[in-house]
Image (cartoon, rainbow, N blue to C red):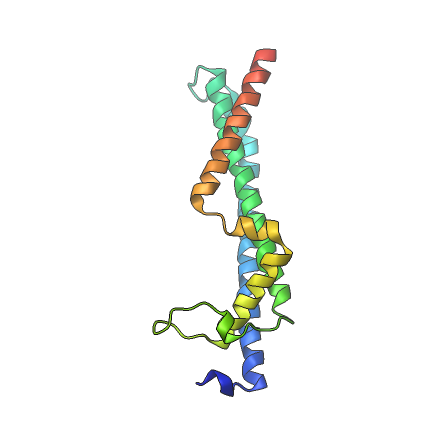
Length: 170
């Protein structure tokens, strides 16, 4: 189908398809948040067993507090990441309702490999709009797993240092 022959109904169908896609991403990320919350609750309930020396044969208080610190910092990074992605997808869901599609010459593609479709023009217009309006959410959305691991390690080190200070003050 030639792109320049799209009817208004075709264009509306493209918006509807993207709206459904973005909405499904919001629902999925909401489910991720619920799963993380349940896991976090379970971990919080399990902390006394970790700190109880009869359950785990860890002799060092530092080792026990390190395990708790590593896990809590992992939960914090995960919650912030998934929450930011949820916001990002919801911003896209809102933007698709009345965004103007990008022109074909504004869409980057590989000539001969891919063609520019109206759906792609809409998606890139939404993405650019959300990226310019909601910078923090967009930056977190684009983070790779390497950066997330680095943030987790940094947060873990901070938690372990706080644990050491608290153990020393005891």
